[in-house]
Image 1 (tube, rainbow, N blue to C red):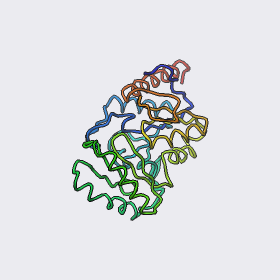
Image 2: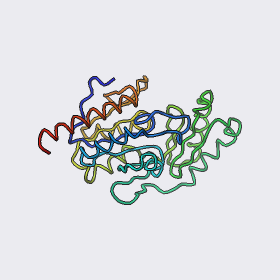
Image 3: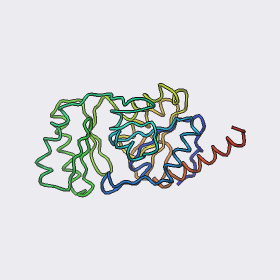
Image 4: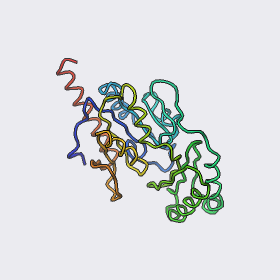
Length: 255
């Protein structure tokens, strides 16, 4: 489903989620593999966009960088809680004991349903029901109660196969704004591509700056994104096609 999508503009700043957007979901996050062909396309696009290409993920920043190595891209992790441009890692929130308290409140439930998996990432967390989707509703109720009970500034998001818990003070939109404040992103048209509820903050930030929002996936959930791509594979095809067009235009112009 590529009809109606523009070719990437040379003046764009492109921001992409990872799981479910650039890459298909795997049964477990560490089972995901980045094809060398995708690394090549991303490296080519990074060059054509003057470096203005960033990954914005719910994964830990170190995990994102390890996943795409040896390719090195600007990236944000844990839904915008941490990021790295050209310099050192920047952390936008401090670790909170409240996150552990939220997770502790659902431990009894987890013990009864061992297929439910908790990943405490330090600044955020995910509770996955991917291996036992029958517990989605009950788990969501318990987590919502736990978040409210702590009185902490955390938000709960329902995703495709799990619940994300993140600090209210940060988002994928705030990560995009941080990148846009400095070169090579500053002054460009922001474009955010994602597939899940936490990506809506990125969509909103891009649209507020006069940019574009593109959702990957054809589910019927409400979204701010006016543009759509069917699958991660189709997103990869669009990236490859755009990189080829940009390279061809540069050669034609003598760049």
